[in-house]
Amino acid sequence: MADLSGLRVAVTGAGRGIGRSIVLRLASAGAHLAATHLALAIGTYGFNLFLPLIIKQINPAYSATNIGFTAAVPYICAALSLMVTAQLSKRARERKYLVAVPLALGAVGLAAVIALRHHPGPAVVALAVTGIGAFAWLPAFWALTTDSLSRTHAAVGVAAINSIGNLGGFFGPYIVGKETDGDTVTAGLLVPVVSLAVSVVLILLWRSPARQPGSETGPAPVADAPATAR
Image (tube, rainbow, N blue to C red):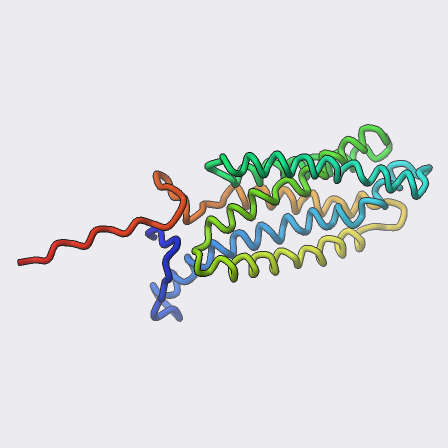
């Protein structure tokens, strides 16, 4: 299908046949990003909301004060990484890699937290890596999203992708809590690990309609009108 970025598209006969195929193709761009956002939200919310319990499990001797200070470490690292990825996103031609790499770090870091839960020092380092992965994808993901939508539909598209993704704010913590047996939360953390890994695969499979091979970002150029036959 030709690049229709920045253009309004009206499809007739969308109920079946070729018209239906065209509508599904146009909708798949937003659906792909919405599914990616849902998967990564399940992973990141599942980690964020259970962070104090994770730290308490890593070292049961920690007081509430120690847990609070330790919980700040992943977020400090995340704040620094956000500034880095925001600057890199301005220069990157393929922003999806700036989304995929942090998400992969988050999955690896969270898996390391599970494996190192009986070793407080290394586990806190793994938490810091997970914190980077849980937030550093944000600038590149939303820049990629707005670049991939036409100006006419950007607001609605971003709202729809964000709304679907935010369902992960319910499913992530719910699944982690459901799988937690009271003595350990690590069994529930396997779900966010898998979810983050799925989001990495999804974003790597993404091809922005605004950036086809050999073209620049932005609306497709308007072809010259054919000469009138004499």
